[in-house]
Structure formats: structure tokens, C-alpha cells
Image 1 (cartoon, helix red, strand yellow):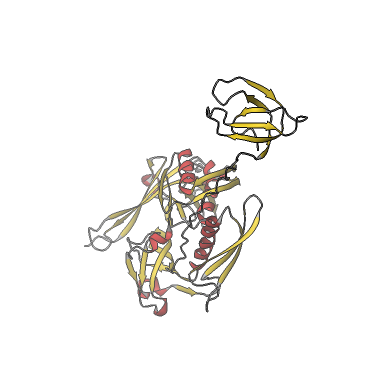
Image 2 (spheres, helix red, strand yellow):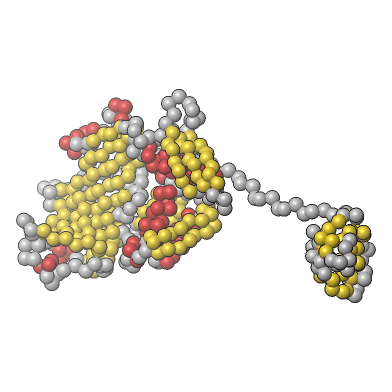
Length: 425
């Protein structure tokens, strides 16, 4: 007799295997894999008829949960494989009656909960997003991966936000994706991942009982953005347009944005990010599918048999729910659209103030100081007051004191000799 297909959760708490202890209590395990915007999560549902979980077995917030899902005899007998869900920190406990159940929830965040809970205030200046991510990861002993172009930020304020919330906000503002997985912060360019080859093809019959929901909307989608922003010390209001087509072209749908930005590139990144974020909601499909090991958050799939809804889709979220009734897999997908990519312009450095040139006969204001009896080094000098004077010799032969001045007003100054560079204007 063939061995049946089944999924077996493999759980450990604080490094200790608890499969035996949970065998008579475990009802289901739900694992949520998110491409970006939030942490992966796990929810463990347990029977609690004896109320043991409300008494001596009451879980402890902050405990570490490690989880695998073992798939046995999946596509054929002997086809066994393991899905590593990652490590989670227990952060939610709930109980219910009718029937009596306990639910334990965990997030893929560091055990040091200050990453998510402690609010901080800090000004970040002249940094890249990669540098911010690296510093935050190092603070919590996390790994770090960055797969995107470098984006430099002149100044950004972390105002009473946790490091977790702040880093998510920075990535969203500048159009990057972020997730925490297996004690690692991962920041990436979603557009790069949308361009990768599809890992699987889904058809209507691949959805359980053909239970799927397709949404296609024009509202909230755009071909470009006009951003008005204030920049510079004078807080002058500026404006720029970024788009997939010309602003006034037929069919253009322009998003109007008012934003604070440090310069034109800062404004461009922010405008493109808002357009792309809105357009991801243009065409979506959600629903339960038969489990497919190739489909995880962050990959692309091809949809066929959906008419105009067919095409390439990006996997935003996968939720796997396994229990004695079987294994369910729910997916949330968005159709891959042409993304608005902002290409930064080269901003010329401010020109250095042009040095004023002086010539013989110029009337200048001597600032006061020392005048010397000759232009040579070591010549004797005398202190004199400030006043109006005339340049009578330029670049004296000794050159230590290259300018010769004669006072124009003896009541102001008695300068009559050689002076240094920068002593008059």
C-alpha cells in the first residue's frame, strides 16, 4: 500500500525540539511568507481542552520559534522535501473557548524586541539607504543583504520611530522592498525581481475549486507624477515631472504630489516610488492554489487561461496552512507592469567664489594689521589700523608680502609698506 502524501510540521522552541510534546495538541501551523513591507510570520494553533496552555504551559513572549514543514510523498512516493520557514520571536498569545484553543503567533524579527518597539529620534545625514540598513542590522546582530542601486539621502529624520518601522518607511519612500528573514534584513529592488523568469505557470484549474478573485482597475494607476517640493535653505518651492509618457500626452494619468525633498534627485526617486506603488494594485489575483514548492514570495509566475488577465505576475504573499485536513496555500499576486525608473541627474557642485583680482592703482580697504618695510621674508613689520589705501606695487620681488599699499586717508590708517594676501578687500 502506497504511503500517503502528508505535511509534518517540525517545531522547536528556544532550540529544543517540541514535536513530541505537541503531538497531542497541535491542530495547525500557518506560515506567511511576505515579499516586502512586513515580517514573515507563523501562527501555531493548539487544542486547550485541559486549559494547560493557560496554566503551567503558558507560553513566554520573546521565546524563539524555529519551524520547518516536511512534505512527504508529495508528487510521488518517496518525494520528500523540507521547507524552512525560518526563525520567529513569539509575540502574541491568544485563547478562545468553544472549542478551547490556544494560538501562538511569532514574527521573523530579532529577539531584541527594541528593533520593533523602542522609538528613537535621530537625524541621518549624507547617507545611502545601504548604509542605514547596514548600521541597523549591525546594531541587532542581524545579517544584511542589499540588491539595488545606491540611493543617497542628504538628510532624513527618524522621529520617534522604531528602527524597524523607520527602515521600512525609508525603503517604501524610495521605492525599495524590505523583509526580515532568518535573522537577516534584506533590501532589494522589486523591479529586478519582476524581470526574472517565471518559476511556474498557473491556470484557473490550479486554484482550489477555481476559487480565485481577479481585480483590474484604472483608478489609482498612473503614467507619471508631477511633484512639487521644497528644497534648499530658502525653502523655495520647485516642481518636476517624471513619467512613462509625456505629461500632456493623450491618455496620461498624472499623480500630483507635494513632498519635501533635498534636491531634484530626491524628488525624482520619491515620485517614481509613489507611481510604482500605486500601479502594483492595478491588476491583482488572489486565491488558494494546490501546493507548489516553487512558488514563494518574491518570485514571478505566468498566468494562462485568464483571457486579458493572463500574463506575468509577481508573488507578493504566500500563506501555507497545514493541519490534519491537509495543506492549503493561498497566494496574492500583482501583474507585472512597466515600472517607472528614475535615472538621477548629475548635480554640479556649487562653483567656488571667484577670487577677486587686484591691480596697481586700485583703491582698497586695508583691514588693519602689519605692514612691512620690504616684500622679503623676515622683514621688519609694524602694526597699523584699518583704512582706505591704494595699491602701488603688485607682486613685489620678495613675494612673502607681495602687495605695496599707501594710505589714502592718514586720519584712518598709516599703512605705507608691504602687506600680505588677504589683508585688504
